[in-house]
Image (cartoon, rainbow, N blue to C red; front, side, top):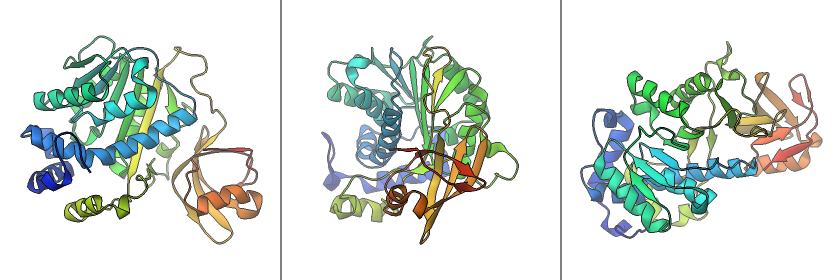
Length: 334
C-alpha cells in the first residue's frame, strides 16, 4: 500500500476519518472535501482504490461486450483524485484518446488529478477545468449523484447530452441505483444503452411491484487483500468490509455513431447476487421485456451452476425460458 507521496505508515488517519464521515453524510455537496494535497494523496491510496476495483469490474465487462469508446478525449467530471479517469485510460489505452480533462469544484483536486495522470501517462495531453467544453467526447462520472442537488443534476444531463458516450459508476445502494435509473430513462432516447442492460427499452425495475429491487452487482477485490496487513488495518480502522464492493453503473453511446453498438440483444443480464441452493439457483434477470426471477436447475446447466456456486462471475446468459425456469443456456459471459 504505497504511492509516490504516501505510504500506509504515513497515512493521516484523522483526515481519512473526516473524509469517510463526509462521504457518508453527503456533506461534500456543501463544499470541498479536500483541505490539503495530503488529503488527496491519502484518499488516492485508500478509498479511491476501492472505487478503482469497481471501475475495473465495469471496464472488464465492457471489454467482454467488445465495446470501445468512440474517438476523442475523456472528461473526468467531479474527478476528485482522478482515479476513474485513470482507470478508463488504462483500460482502453492512452494512445486511443486525444486528451484527458480533469474537472472538479476543487482546484486542489484538479491539480492533484492532473499531476497523477501525467505521471502515469506521460505521453497523454492532460488538461484541467472547462467542463463547459462543447463536445466532451467520453464523459466519465464516478460517485457523484448523492452530492448533486436537482439543479446540478440538470446541468449534468445537459453535459451528457453533448457527449459521444458516457461511463457512469455509482455506489450499489438502492437510492443511488434508482437515481441512476432515472438518468438512464432521460437519456435513452438519445443514446444506446450499452451496459449493464442488453436493451434500450424502459427499465424493467420501474414496473409496479419492483420498487424494492435495484440494479447492482459486486466487484471482486484483488486477490490477497484479506492477507495484506495494511489493507486489513485500513478496513478495521475505517469500519469497512474490504470484501463488499457493491456498484451500479451505466454505459451509453450516442445513437447513430456505430451500427453495432448494442451487440447483445436477446441476452439476459443477471442483477445482484444469485442465490444458490443444493440443486438449483435463483437468478434475478433483466431483458428487453422486463425483469423477473428465474430458476436454473443444476442438471440443465451443470457448468454454469458450478461457476455460480464457486462465486465466479456470470453476468450474462442467453437461453430459453419456460415460465420462471431458465430451461436451456446457449451461452454465458464471461
